[in-house]
Length: 272
Ligand SMILES: [Zn+2]
Picture (tube, helix red, strand yellow):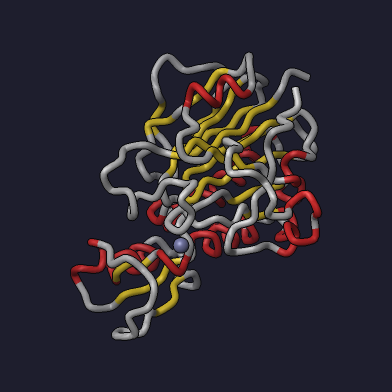
């Protein structure tokens, strides 16, 4: 069954690939429940969606009848779980992978980056939860390595879509977050120093309280760099673009502190 209702919606941070694709024009009505990307839509047998606000677990299973939703107990780790059948209870970790049909791998987010990965040569799919901590631990690169070790996936054959997350203009963090990246060996290329008294964009976070230094963190850039370093061609990594903090269709932990709701981001393999 084709998910015909879905369409890729451009956000503030446009990707060249999306702009060159007429299906990517920003014309999709706001009533669509989830975003997709043409690059993943083109992979045979794959289903995926980056859910908008209010589209939750039951809705995801209804969207693709016959699929079982697999959720993790997400702990901001770099733990990748391989699943062949629905586990009896939620596994702890922050990335899911499978080569079995009928499993809808789900990552819940509200500002963190959801990353959906598929193999264009083998029937393999993965979903990754990359907040700042998981990113500092290299979870995207770890997922690419894991797919290779477990399923024989070649990085050159993978495609990946970055879903909505908090954009760099809105994601102010403190020295402690940057220090964690340095400690983990993740480097600081994705941090931009914010002029101390410029009063620029961003919501001061509790993370910054310990020191005067503030930075803007670009989760997408950090994860793109990890994927590239792991061997995934840059042209095979696409971006859903939207900022969770700016876009009212999405959920933002920083903006919506009173909610425990999360966005559902899912990927799965159909029966061959
Ligand atoms: Zn924003």
